[in-house]
Image (cartoon, rainbow, N blue to C red; front, side):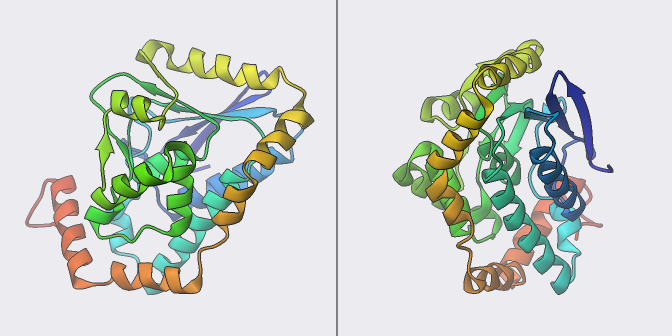
Length: 258
């Protein structure tokens, strides 16, 4: 795989996001994650997964530099794939633990939210959903996923502000479950996954799917109208201007900024 590294250890699949320094999400990563999760779900030799990133970055979110240059068909395909992947991950029946090694804004936060348990490194990191200030319309499915963990009122306020949180703030509102020092992240993630794997597999999985039934149903509710509104806003002059500014800051080269 081009964007992932997978290691199997005692029936645990350690899925490492492996795309550049910050693990920015592009279409290729979504496709590979989607195929991998569907394969693992049907592989009896793998009982659960740990999703992890790199030093200081879990995932910086969508690769705005690459996405900015997508044509109309490519960006439409990306959003369809993104929402389809979130639906796949939310409905993934086996245990999943996110080992959040650093920054995890926007799409990176979404990946973590799909998991059953989130453990994050202590440090000067950010996590949360900041799509609105970037000029990206939040699909209702992402609101439902966010509010599943932190409650509707708080999710509503945070999304409309595009609020990014420190690890301690994320812990206090239930966005993450634990804070650990970097040297303990992997061992703690494996220990938590083992807690789940000690249960009867069918009982655990069916209980998970029962408790996520409404959420899973909400993942399929993104209408053509919502998708079209996302795409329309993506091409609007205001959003393109915001994206250009962000990309210029990311590349550190204003003359060549897109």
